[in-house]
Length: 502
Image (cartoon, rainbow, N blue to C red):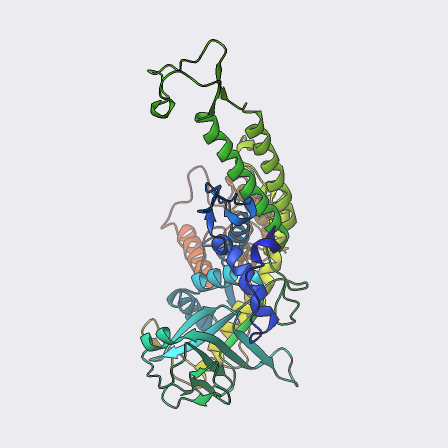
């Protein structure tokens, strides 16, 4: 059915083969796949009285399971409670980068990029305007990357080229001398410039790109300000090496089947509320004026008969069960969220939820690699490199140039927030390790930093030391039910802290 729906969408020979494949997948992701069909689902006959097959009608029920699976997986990667924190060897740099993440709304940018890139790939453009950094996700249907031969993981350039109508160019402010309907629009990013070209007619023989010196920008960064991200490991739907595997490709056909089956079920329910009236032998009176209602009786001859062509409701129930099974199969193929909240009788621990959502976590784990290690980190390192070349402003304040030897990494939070019982068990375990001298206090605080929203570990350690000194000096009472007691250290020496119940 998917191939039948997309058959009218012919491939333009002027574009690469991947352009059509990505366009089709994006239509499915955005729910525009049925825009190619002319008739609504309730239209059974056209103006000529000919029957319209179901494959030519748009379903009346839309259940975009593909979009739901993508959003669920992306939420486990870049939502408010799952966005990674930046670990840095320099505390001052770390604070600056945290402010950068908030000012540039990088969590929102990465969420949009991961949803858009679920078709196979996405590109994120970095721009600097008035010394401020901006990030912009770009769809890749009309983008073509080029890689350096001596460094296959480094971009040498990115070309954007697509067709646009004359009217749209005029709305952008272009003055066109040629009387043509379609024009080429092209931009190229390399390590020195962002090159714009004048639009040229598609059908004009011998026409080609001519650089627009007004729009062209000389950034002279020494690197291409674009990060190209492949979605998932595996073969792409387009067969191109520049794209990754599509997140929802395995569930497309099943999703279309669900929508058409539910539409048919709805059609049957509407028919049940207003069934067709069958009359055997002509009725007395003017049948053209008869209005079916409880106040009107249909009178037929003694040999005649009248009945309603009704259907039972078992078919609708069967369709619902069938669609429920299809939904499970589609989610299993896409590694989507198959848990049912109705089956949860009580609050579950974080570990239990992980086991319940294991397939979804496996998918999100791959996305963490693609959009985190191969997407977010290169963007941060790009800003760090840029800070050594140009003065940047973050939250209105100048950014101190970041040295080349500063290392940055990502620390991902747990998949699901721990319950109160989980926190108690974790605290008891860390306290035991700390008292036994197996773990340092700093490591213990780092372990609970995400759970208790501790942004600065060193600042928290200073606050802990201050509280302990106040308790020992007697200026602050210990917690209720506890006495001040100095516990022996790992070597039998007297140490600070360690308040325990009497």
